[in-house]
Length: 310
View 1 (cartoon, one colour):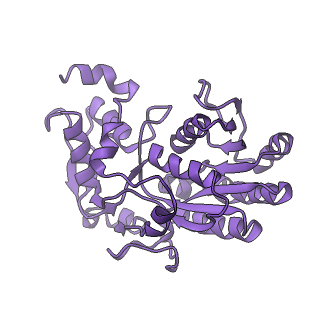
View 2 (view 1 turned 90 degrees about the vertical axis):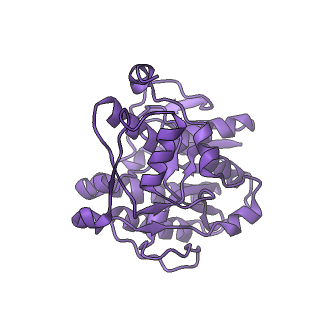
């Protein structure tokens, strides 16, 4: 199949391109300012996606079977400080892609977020639960879901994804990469002991997206996440232990939401997702934290520092 992929140089987009190419799909991907060659991407397009109409001509020229939207401003803090750009990428872009999918009769696979929920309960959220976002990013994702499903209701799969693990092309996007950036710079990252997430790897999510590309019978709102719910602090300790780093070399400060009340107002305490529906439909399985850690690499910017810790 011909696939038009946005965000091909991002954490999930790059993993999806590799997964799709292994199945023989032809992927044309947008890469923004990324200048390297991405495995699995047959043709790379340097487009400014904050101007959503820039995708119109290349999509019409490709006439894809499927459009996969992995592009987003996914940092809630950045969404707050740059609302115009984040609105463009998180709402206007998926809306335009949905319009193009409708025009071409193409399938659309769009990534949303767990952050559409309030996060004040420990019971996993199902796809039928009422959304109640507490930050701009969550509100943008709700708007994108509504737009996509209303425009292509029979051909859209919208996946609410969790906190992601994995190796990004830039080496600075994923949680472990950010931890290494702090440690190698002599900084002590602060992680919440009372903020819980259900992470999965970008590679695992990419396999889900790849299956959805090939499964036009699975549509609507969908949830995907890992097999375990952990605190951010616990996850940081597991990452440190996996790479056999000492507490002295790789310190982590434990904090609670009460320590940062202003920030915590825009952060969810617990985002557990009920993924049983999608698990029952796909071959891809959710991974444990230990399974996710196995595939992680030392990010390139921190490799010299890491060698001195051995």
